Amino acid sequence: MSQKEKVILAYSGGLDTSIIIPWLKENYDYEVIAVAADVGQGDELNPLKEKAIKTGASKIYIEDLKEEFVTDFIYPTLKAGAVYEGKYLLGTSFARPIIAKRLVEIAEKEGAVAIAHGATGKGNDQVRFELTIKALAPHLKIIAPWRIWDIKSREDAIDYAQQRNIPIPVTKKDNYSMDRNLWHLSHEGSDLEDPWNEPKYDNLLKLMVPPEKAPDKPTYVEIYFEKGIPKKVNGVEYNPVQLIEVLNKLGGENGIGIVDMVENRLVGMKSRGVYETPGGTILYAAHRELELLCLDRDTLHYKDIVAQRFAELVYYGQWYTPLREAISAFVDVTQETVTGTVRMKLYKGNCMPAGAKSDYSLYSEELSTFGRDAVYNQKDAEGFINLFGLPLKVRALMLEKNSSKDKNNV
Image (tube, rainbow, N blue to C red; front, side, top):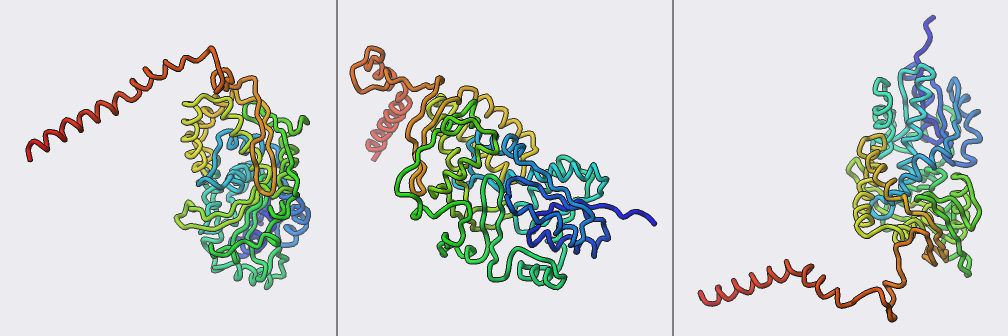
């Protein structure tokens, strides 16, 4: 009897991937090997081993990718200052390429012929998974059940699971689509699909308290960065995973990091989501303050342009591309002097700067002071303005001259 071909399934234990195991067996007769990537989901992973086997997987890998996730994906994006559409800190976006990378590695190890995922045909994740697979293992077949099967909604998926006695983590009454990792927690679907509906934060939030329920006294936190990478919180050095966990706790207690936005998906439609990113919000704000202190004007302003493109590349699933790698190389050069300490004030959802210092600071109190100084000759400004404004003056004189001609011709 010939051995069955193998398929690697990106497995989360959620609604979609729970029903994909029996669906793959029914429709392809593959041996299904589940792979769950631990990128900081917490307790969600505990029941997965038993659940995957019970629903038909031959084996399951549960891979701890948390530290690699932080050092190789979160930190490069943080250093770039990349924010999608001015609000989204890319929590789901940069988790997908590291997961897909591990899927490819296990597919090679197991001799699998295909990789399957539970991303829908309406979303961004299908692109992120598949572009990574194409970049790293172009020979592997990709199966995306949501683009093939007759299931058309989450309600249909719930019915499919119940018909096969598959335990699922949602009901038709509590039907948010959530994605959690070390960096953030996203919420989509249900009442959030109407942008006019205010999120029910008391029931929705999992990582933080609503800002109005945060303490009445502010919390101060000091973060030390070395070449753009956070190393210490309040003077204590942490490993990358611990550092984000500490800041998540501080941010969550103070209601920091709620983003409610309507965003432009890569596939062409708009979607509405609520994101919780407590530690990430603090890190982005602190990193920006340090850059304002340490980067020269031209580099800072050009880096802002690059940051927007970097954010698009991450959001679009183009992590493993020459352009993303080239931008990261540029960013790394800019971060050579981004070393120092930033103090942030956390208060009822607000994350405010409260001081910054660095041995590489370009701020000179002697130059900037409003008091008497012996360094800056204010008369020098006149020549600078004359030269800087010369093109404007020349154009104005031209317009004035031609205006006079027009009047004389009337």
